[in-house]
Length: 245
Image (cartoon, rainbow, N blue to C red; front, side):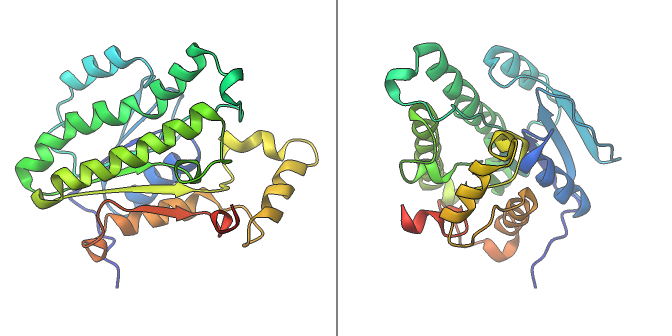
């Protein structure tokens, strides 16, 4: 039986205003955790154990300034680095430097900054979980444009190195690699008659898109005692999409 009691646990999640991050936030709250939820947009949810932070992760100095005064920075048990942006599937020659840098400023650098802020406290307790949101685009080509694919490959590499460096000190680090998840970030695929969404579903062996709650449920398992021997893994949740690509 999976132990999903997270009372006396403190979870920090980014990208919590919608999609996967929102479902992770509510799932851990339901499991008893105290949750710090960060997003640049308003988080429309209330719970006695929820602390909301409105901050743009691409503003790195503002993030560092906030972290310097964050009273719970040494008490975080689980860090969920979920926030991210897409790049409209643009190839390299259609990606200017500003667009390239912005994708990395949102998708990659905040993971490093937040990890380095919370990791010392985890190491002191010899216990901690870090879940980085990668993508099938972090494993193969075709899941995004040049900047997005490069950023997600960077997340995969960072995840593996973190686990390699700190697994022997009680730290568990995983990456989740979602495929087609029905979130606001993918709303354009469902616009109009939803032809793009239907096409993606047809290309997926499971013949459907996943709901963000399915990713949140996987996250909860990965931070449970039953997943204790998993470390440094990149776990696809893509309905088999990557099998044919």
